[in-house]
Image 1 (cartoon, rainbow, N blue to C red):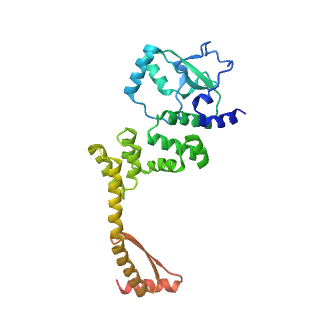
Image 2 (tube, one colour):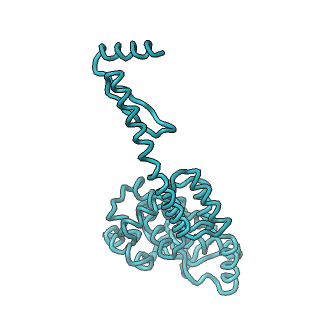
Image 3 (cartoon, rainbow, N blue to C red):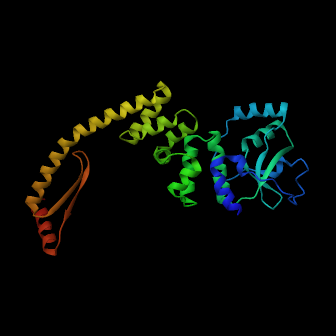
Length: 287
């Protein structure tokens, strides 16, 4: 029954998922539902990986002045420790502020729903950068076999948006680092995917940072590249097609040519030992 309630609550926000401790027998929880900060552990599967140091310092100053107003949501590990589900940033800032105890909300949840909840919490707060969001969705697919319909329900995003988010992971590692650092936006990242090669992607990514190029600038560059590429293809294809026909005529075999005038490969098909011997004789004759 608990699992059913959790499933129905995913789209309603974090508050609907929080359950009170209901008289947990943990001796570490005092009457104010507080725990020693040292008994809280970060979630290893937390979708959010990057925490801005300056932002943490600002939050720690606020906590020093006003206390931690919003409880940290945790899961009881039954070993004296508690895994953070929502509020790792507040936990980190509280450590900086020198706080010894923090208010908590405790819920019972399995690993799969723990990951879902952490993802929902970060998405609703817009705390994830595009790479973290893509990695989280990828984990839901690969680790937990989520269908497209389940992803849409959990993330609240449309199918096309989820697809574009996942495609960001196809970018070179250097570009992914720029996205994580906040130097390249999600819109820039998606526009870069339309460029013709990895070297071009890296080149334009550097220009985004150095020249402050807009998403429309990148889209324009990609359109120009596409037009230039398409304008060159017919000439290459005509040359390759004529060469293919001449080779088939000379050898009497079926030939496939893959690539362009600059680079590619030739496949020669034979269907009998006789045809293979004829091919060998052809090469010897023309060597």
